[in-house]
Length: 379
Image (cartoon, rainbow, N blue to C red; front, side, top):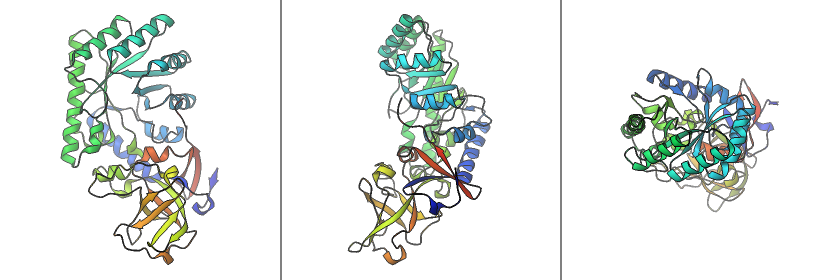
């Protein structure tokens, strides 16, 4: 459905600027091409087949997802080679087996011998083969095994003895979101690479035919200087970018393709603040910039066309359906400049968290708006 005016859609609404998104995709494509690796885009941010195809265009590999609902949605759209990049819960082995029998190539990850045993036992009992990667830890930020841990070999041996791989290793340097300089991002990207290559080589030396060496986060992917020994890069938020990425120095404000369209619904004259109809149900409660040099509150406010406003404004606080917009300086806003009904855009702290609040978005492109659906839930 094409809508010719932003003024015609109800607020709050999720907007994605097509040309900006395309430029972000081109930037990542140039980076991975220059490093000589393939890209397996993470689709958790866009959750839409049209944008997924843009991210995958020119790449021979498949894609990455975070939920089985995403896997089902993208499989139905013809994207059948997917990595489910969340440690597999034993209760999800049966749903995954059903999907594999239906023709979906869904690669799993795990990082514990007990999970490997559960997977092997299920595979034997149900005569099913799984494709498995062992998750690694590059920075102590989240999940994964260290390359020197004995549990790495234990996990791999359990999988091999049960006829279930492993097919490779996978690492996500989530600690990149705590880096505060480009040098730090480059150093962590190299650490991520070394962890993956070291683990892969250790497993190969033990007779495991490791094929996949998968690394990636948007910051490390864009600031890596070499990826020798790596077979693929995973990244996702690069397509839309957000204020966290700006705070890390990964991109500029102009590279943020995603925003929430909102409308002024009230004035708080005593404090000189605006009320808008985008609360935490639209923006999420993500405060990812709170530890940055520049705290962006719950989002940075722009005008209805996405341009800057003379007096820097942010969403200072949120209720369920209300956002409180204040001046960054703390001075009273000129409320008469923002009469009731004024439309504004809010750039989000975390693109994935904000987008997850909506079941569709409006793509701004070719002087029009196209409404596109997003998949939803966990499945």
